[in-house]
Length: 157
Image (cartoon, rainbow, N blue to C red; front, side):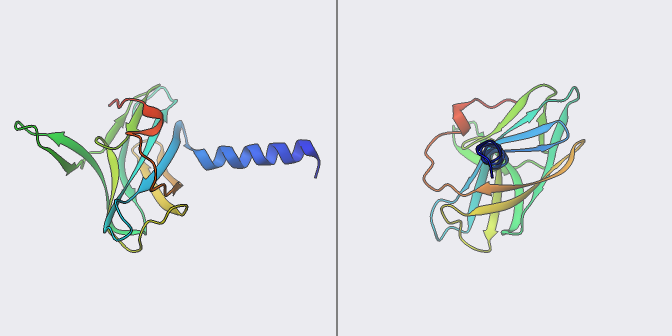
C-alpha cells in the first residue's frame, strides 16, 4: 500500500471514529460514562449538528446495553435542587444549528445496564430523528473524562 493510500485510509478511519452522519445531521465527539464499575446506569453525551435548512428533532434513543434508554435533562426546582427528568418529546435540533448533550444538561440515559461500562469499550446507540430517521453510532466509553461537555461548548435548544 502506498503512503498516500495509507494516509487517506488512516484519516478516513479517524473521521469515522469521531463523527457520524444521517441526512443533514452530524454527531461529533460522543462519549459514554458510568459513575462506577458497579453502577446500574450510565449516560452518553455528544454534539448534534443540523447542517440542513429544516429544523429536526431527536425523538428517541435505543441500545441493547440497558433495559431502558431515554432522553433526559436536568432541571432546577424553586429551591435550587437539581433533578433529572425524562424528556418524552425529545430535543429540537435547529436548522443550521446544534444541540449539546452534556453533563448537567440534556443527555442520553441508560438505565438497568446489562454489563458495566468499561474504559475503552464502545456502546452501540441508535438515535432516532423526526426527519432524518435512524442513525446508528458506536459511542466510546470514557470513564476518565472530566469536562462538563464536549469541547466546553454551551447548550442550545
